[in-house]
Picture (cartoon, rainbow, N blue to C red):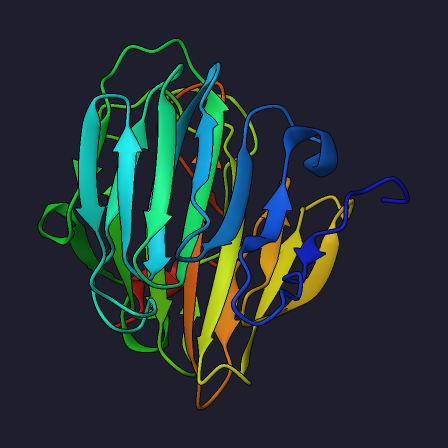
Length: 271
C-alpha cells in the first residue's frame, strides 16, 4: 500500500462568498479508470460553464438553487438549502453537451463523470423522480435515495444518496464490488461524499480486503470525500449525528452486483 492513493480528501477552504472546487478526484489521482467526481460551490454572478466532452455527467444539487442550461434545455433546480432538508434535484448530461450553471444563491453542486458514447439524452431528475428505499433493520436501518439507479438510462454512472441515523451502520453487511464477474459481481469504482448533521460530528468507514492488502479505518467529517478503490467498505455514524453520503459509481459494466463479506452475512437473518 506504499503507492496507494490518499483515501480521505478534505474540502478546500474558500473565501467568504467565493465559488470554486471543494473536493475533487480523477482517475489519475485515484489510480483507477472510469470515475471522476467533484463538489463545487457556485455563487451568484460567477457561472460555471463547460462541456462534457467524451464523458457522461451526473449533477446532484447538494444544496442551494441553480439554473442549469444543458444543450437546448434550461432547468430551474433546487429547493433544499442542504442535504438534510429535503429531496435532491439532479440531472443527467450525455457526452458532448455544453452546459452553464448559474446560482440564484450559493449552491453546492456534486458532479460525477465517466466515459460514454452518447446513447442517451439529457434528462432532469426532479425530487418526485427519486426512488426512496428503506434498507436494513435495527442498527443497520438507513434510507437510500436513488437518483441514477441501474435502471436509469445511462451508460456507466450510478448515483444514490444514503442517510444513516446516529449509531447506525450502512453499507452493511460489509460488501464489495471490485471484480468483473458477471452475473455475480461487477467492478464499480466508488466515491463517498460526506455531510454530517450537526456538522461537527463524524462517521467511520473501514475499507478492507480479505487478504489484508487493504485494512484502513477512515474518519469522515463534514465535507470529506472518501475513495473506495476495492474491498469491503462499511460505514458507521457517530452517536448524536446523522450521516449523509452521496455515492457515485462507475465501471466497465452498468450493474450493481455486490458480494457480502461471508463472515457477516448472518446478520441479514437476525430477527
